[in-house]
Length: 118
Image (cartoon, rainbow, N blue to C red):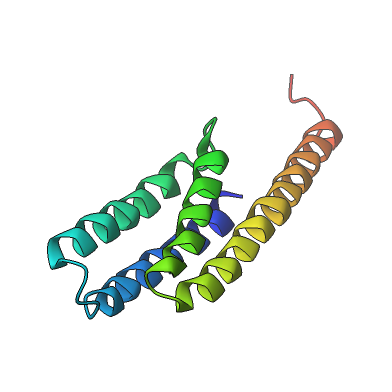
């Protein structure tokens, strides 16, 4: 699960950075505000790469997905991109857990079929 979720988060890192560049063109927003919010979101993406398998990591990822969709109020394209990344996040969590379960089953099966060397 960690690999799939981390890949999604790294993709989001870049999308958030590019959205920040687009948001800078809005005359109602200061550059400081745009880059503070974008920087925090980008930093959160990187931190979540390491926290995704810990308790609450997936929930924080969902909060990030909601924030990414909500950023569409500033950059309208982010409604679409946020929805795409939310779907990717769901797939990463769902299929990542299935892969982890399959690996655990395979490891247990391999361990039980190996004769003891004692």
